[in-house]
Length: 117
Image (tube, rainbow, N blue to C red):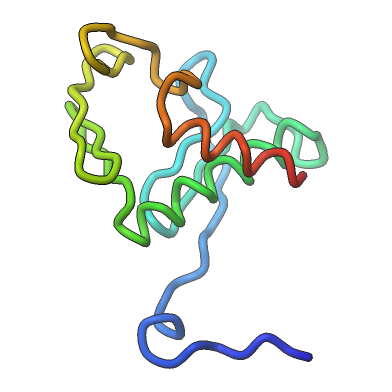
């Protein structure tokens, strides 16, 4: 049975594009918005790292599309909570943790998406 496009909004969603680019040292990939992912051009496209990075960032892009998460230069929103963001770190409670840390619920959800690769 073929998948059919859902009526309304679903048929208007753009597919998520994956681009290669030079990223900051140590950054493998990032979800730019709800329909664009950038992977570090140094990561081979046929590698497991590339596949996991795309799965991870695709999850973030889909959550952005659904309004579950949002990012700004100095904040991250997950659901109804807004977390301050500064110098590559995000504050949760009284602790500042590195972006991408598994201490954040949105990162744990995206890491789970990597398991299917």
